[in-house]
Image (cartoon, rainbow, N blue to C red; front, side, top):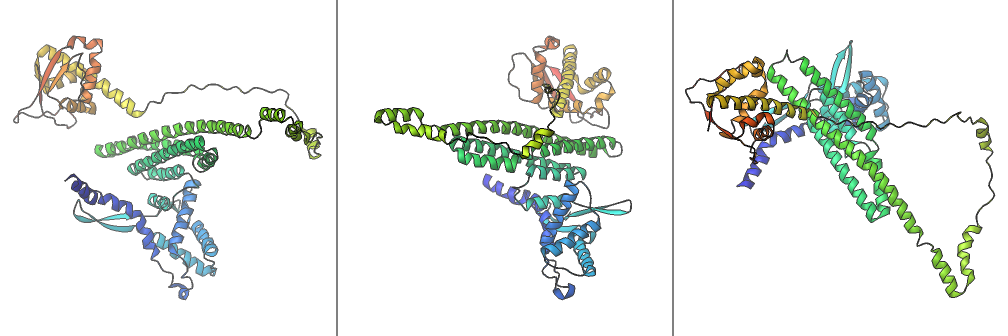
Length: 512
């Protein structure tokens, strides 16, 4: 039965995600069906639309992301004309070339409409439509500017196993595009792929270290390949990390600025996606810095291993003590020639190159060599946003726990309406607009009985951890040993509306 459930989940539940992953390939196969046999009686039938599409995508990625500028139609037309002449060995007249280039661009843009991808959704039991564009456009100052879409970048990256380029840099280019298009959820998936790439490089580093220990020659080859294909882009990757982090901060500020114009639910969704993306990116940046430190240590260890290997190979080549001992045993002094002969061939006379005379005459030494001052910069402890959120929640929950215990000690029993009235007087009406208050009630309702004891070690919920922390503080000492019970409201009892439109059921508290 469990295997059958897994099978059903793979077929039905995951089908929508698989189709949405496939949609980025749909325009390529649709464009591959385009024929040029209509033009000039088929003399340009050798043109391949699949190749042209990949060339144009690479051109747009170069201009949009590496040079950070959008493309105008004349720039595309110039590139496409060169591509047709160079790669297909065709040289049509200028008028024919203009018509041909324009026809190709209309096909790539699908005449300004998105490519329509149809698929069946077994969860909703109906056919759905997904739209995808490869090239986006915008009008600014009377000029139409074109850029590659996030789907176009993702499709281009998926068609090649990147070895000669930094996969992390390429993925960050896609991340930048998704942040700018406000696709924060898709950006989170991209950052997770970056984390997987960092993990792959980490495993590769460990393999290189193992090879260096076992076989210095194979290890050196793997070491050079590792640094030439995976590590040499660290500086560029760090710059892109910083750039994307700044884009996320800007997106957060825009979301805060637009809070009043959007509905509250939409605001919470956007800020939640931005927060998740920011957290994933900080994890990726931290892992990336750890990898850089580990690779620096690997470089030092590799130099030491090579040095030891050279000395190890030199000693068996010629042992001076062994040579002298062998000459004495054989009573043959001519064997000592092996010691003297390499020295006798040295070139003692040295010459000074004429080309260096001018360098000596023009050399101007500095008056005073000033030592470089190296200051040890203090390492700042990074405090992540989730740590600040956790600290705020624990502080708010602790204050509410103290209010609840003090009220129980005075009255022995009361309901949530009484707690709300007292909390409103102490903390103000702003309390009922704070989500921490309602999440506290949700956590509190997870259990029916609570015991405020110092020797209690079993913590079943998140709130139990905060109870345990409060027990150790002096201001809670008067409540030690207190036990209380939560009882749900009767079905006919009125619900409470504390503020901001929230409705909650009443709860009765009673000391056991």
